[in-house]
Length: 209
Image (cartoon, rainbow, N blue to C red; front, side, top):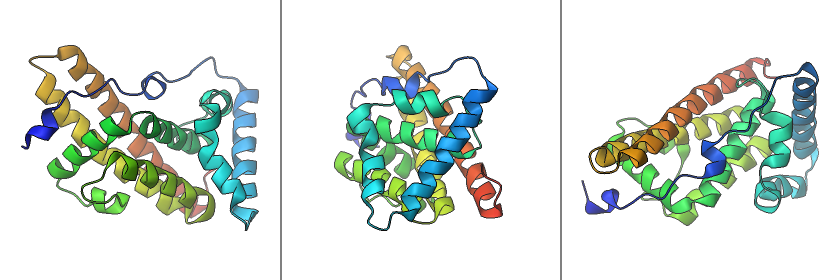
């Protein structure tokens, strides 16, 4: 493989790797579902697109904590659960686009599937282009076909899984701690991909709430 794939990888975004969690409560889950539904409805009804752009920029301006309080405890395959995973993915890419681009390109080269095509990133994708891609996917969530946006995000995750797994293998002998971090990242992204695909299927059948 080209030498560029063996450059040091900075520690992945802490916001991505350390998920917020606390004791479940029926009221928290109810509020999570209600706010996610209201947010999506409002964005889709705003023909000007201004609400969508504010939602896309939200984490850059306010961080992830406010969203976490609402959605982090929701079931993985639910409307708030899917939105929470999309926002975490966006935050990870915005926080460390260089590592995201490195892992994405390694995964694209190694992965024998159409996932990179489905995700829609340029070839090869620069850090700036990956930031633009995740923002475009979020626009699709709020303005386009919701299920297709979820499937694109899932495909993106699978490419990153491949990249993180292969780069972890590169580091296993010399930097086992970093290899372990990337392996954890790959496992989490793999679960996100499965959750987002399941959510896409439920959305198409009218069962995602």
